[in-house]
Image (cartoon, rainbow, N blue to C red; front, top):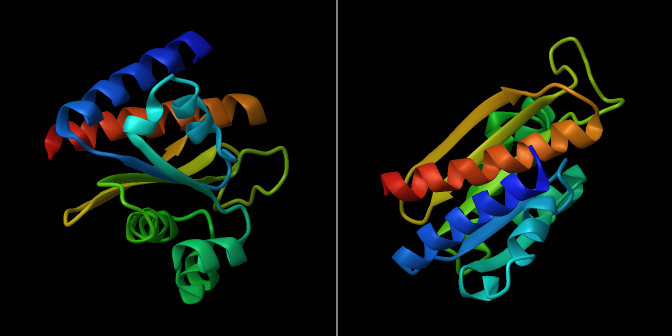
Length: 164
């Protein structure tokens, strides 16, 4: 996934959101704000990008997004249950109509037999609508995993906006 392909995805996300008059909020962990960065690289993004939350620690996920400590204890930060709550928390704490959330194991450490390197959980939420989550497995080093997660998150926004 090249920078040019990410820029193209952002252009498509911008067009889709502007066509609906919607705003986007992001809740990121392993990508450290990369989705927000590529969104705001586009001039005029304040018309469709509302805000971003970088919640790297469990405490930040709880304090900033309202993630249930029990979910973090039982499921872990890298889980569909957690990213679902991150996505709904981002909507609850913003003026956006759609949100995305990302949490994963980008490496080089942190992997376990049940949560291998490259495992990324993503979620998308639409205000007053459904929350969709999935788990993906990306190959490569830390940079490659994070870059693929950013692309998957943006592509997912296109899907949920088109379906809404």
